[in-house]
Image 1 (tube, rainbow, N blue to C red):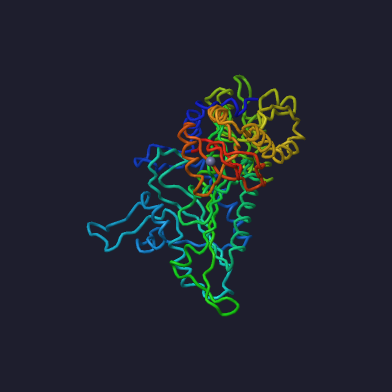
Image 2 (image 1 turned 30 degrees about the horizontal axis):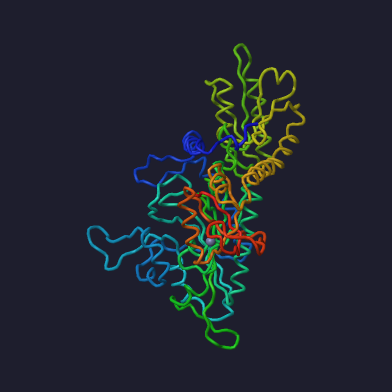
Length: 487
Ligand SMILES: [Zn+2]
C-alpha cells in the first residue's frame, strides 16, 4: 500500500494542487484571487460536514441564526484589539451605484460585532443565560499571505458560535464542550487526528482572553489550524453594553465564547491527511459516491447480461441506503476507469465482467487498504456492510499512526532545527506562552526557517522538571510547547 509518508515535504504542495484539479474539487480560474469555485464533488462532502456540525450544535443547546453579511463600521470599532487585529484584512463596502454611503460597511471577517450588538437588545436577566447561537457563514478576509485553495482563501466558509454565560467558569466549560465536539466530528467521524493547543498570547484571536486552536498535520509536517475556540471574557459584552441582572438583582456583564470550525479548511485537511499517491480518499460517510459498479466489456461478449447484473446490484444497494453509481465510461479501458474513481476517493468498487458472471462472483476493491477480494454474489451485501463499518476506522488508524510518527520531543536547539526540516512536530521546553515568551518565539522562528510555537497541549498536562531550561533563552522552562511550520 502506498502511504502518506511517501508524499515527501516538497512533493506535497504539487500533489495537493494536482489533486484539486484532477479530482474536480475546485476550479481556480475564477477571476478574483483567493476566491475559488467549489465544484460538486467537494461541495457534496462540505455540506455533509456542515450537517454533522448542525446536528451537534442543535443537540448542545445552540440555536441557529442567519445574520447580515455587512457590519457597520461603528460596531466594528467598539473593541480595540479586535479592530486592530482585523482592520488590515477587512473588505469595506463604501458605495451603492455611484453614490458613497455615509458610513462604510465591513464584509464580515467574523461576526462578534454583529452578534453582540443584537445580544444587547435581547438579554437582560440571568434567566436569559446561557445564550448559545450559531450561524453558517462565508467570511471575507484579505489575507496578505499567498492564497491557497481550501487552506487560505479570501472568502471561506465556517460556522461561528457566539455564546454568553453568567460566569467565566461556565464559559470555560463551553470551550471544553467545543473541544469534545471537535473530537467527535473531526477525529471520530472524519478520521482527522489533531492536537488542541492553548495558543501563545501573541497568537490569539484579536479580542480574546485565550485562544485554543486545533492543529492537524499535513504529510510535509506543516500544521493546519482547522478549528479554534476562544474565551472572550467580558471583552465584547462591556463595549456592546450586553448586561444582565444577576440573582441578587445586581447588574453584571456576561462572559463570551466563540467557536469557529473552518469547514473549507477541514475539507482541505481531509485531502492532505487521507490522500495517497493514487489520489483522494474520503471517509465512507462523506463520499458523494460510496460504491462504484464497473461493468467490464469485452468484444464478442453479451454486454446486456453484464449491465443487467450491475443494475440489479445498484438497485439493491441503493435500497439499502448506499450512494451507488454505475460507471458508464464505456469508451475507456478498465484500468483508466478504475484509476479515475480511485483518484476521486470512491470507497468501494464492484467489478462485473463476463467471467465473474459465469463464476457467480464479483471482484470488490476497497480504497482504505487498496485491496481486492473475490466475493460470491450471495455475500456481496454482507461484504459491503463490513467494509462500510470498518472503512473510516481504518483511515483513522492509518492517520493516527502517521500523526504519532511525526511527534517527537527534544531539548537540543540544533536538533530542533534539523527535525523541523524533516517535517516533525517537536515538543520542547520553553519559558512562557505569555507575552514575556514572545522574544524567544520570534528568535526561534527566524532561526529555524519558520518554526512556530503552536502552544501548550490541552488534552494532557505536561509540566517540565525543575532543572529543565527554555530551549531558546536557557532560563527556567515553565511549559512544554510544540513547534512546527504552519500553513
Ligand atoms: Zn525563553
